[in-house]
Image 1 (tube, rainbow, N blue to C red):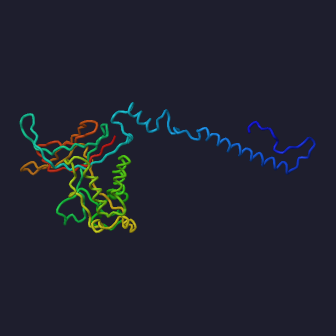
Image 2: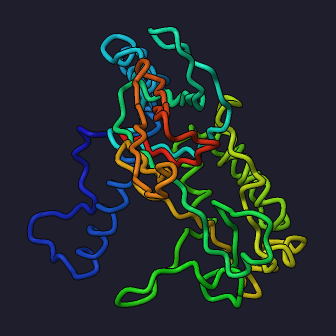
Image 3: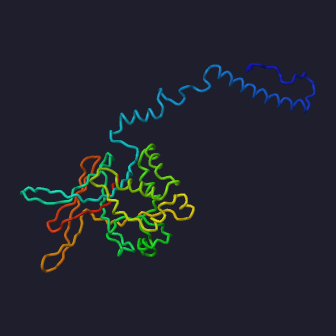
Length: 323
C-alpha cells in the first residue's frame, strides 16, 4: 500500500550492510514500483475509466460533426473543399447552327453557343483556345484533318507522330502521357467518385479499353451541345496495333505511356479568319469575337460572334477555367 513503511530488508543498529543486501534492496524497489503500477491500472479499470466511451468526441460531437455544423452555420451554400486553385478543362466542338433575328428584323445564321456547367460556385477566370490541325506525318493519305491524337510514347518509333514536337534549344514533345491526363481528370472528384473512375483504368484492361474510357471522360462532360466528335480524334497505326494488348504487358515491354496530343492556340477572345474581297482577289483578316458570359456562379457561356463576311462551319475549342 502507499502508506506502508515496512523496510525491504530489516536491520538493527550496528549491523553490517553487505553488498548483497544493497543489491536485494534495489531489486525489491523495482519490483515494488512495478506492482504498484499494475495495481493502479487494475483500479482504473474497475472504476470504468480505462478509456471513456466518448473519448473521440467533444460536447458529444465528433470532429466531422463539428466540421459539418460549422460549414452549415458559416460557409456559403456553394462552399466546397477543393481549395482556391480549382481547375477545369473542356473540349468543345461547336457545329450546330441557329438563326438569330436582329433588332432590325434581319436574320443571321450563327454557331450555337455552348454552356459549360462547371459547378464551381464562383466566377472562374476563363481562357479560350482554338485547336489547330495536327501535322500528321501521313496526312496526304488521310481524307480529313484531325485536332486531337493518341500516339506512342515520345521514345517510340511512331512515324505518324514524328512531327509532334517543337525544336527550340532542344526538342519538346507535344501532348501529355495519358497517365497524367487521367490523373488530372480524377483528382477533382470526391473520394467515392475517384474510386469509380479509377476502376475504369486497370492494368489488366487493354489499351483500347483505356482509350475508349478516356475519350468519354474528355469529350462527354455535359450537355450534348458540346460533345466533341470522337471522329476528330486520330489514333496512329502504332496505337492501333497495340490496342488489343493489356496495359500491364505494354508497361513490361517499355511501350508506355501513349501520349494525348493537341495543339491549342490562345485566341484572346477573338478569331482571325481570312476572307476574299471579291474580284480583286485581295484577302483581309476579319475578327470574330468569342463572347464569354458568366450566366451564374455555376455556368459560363462560350458564344462565337458574327461577321457578315465570315461563316464558321464549325469551331473546335479548348476552354480552361481557373478559380
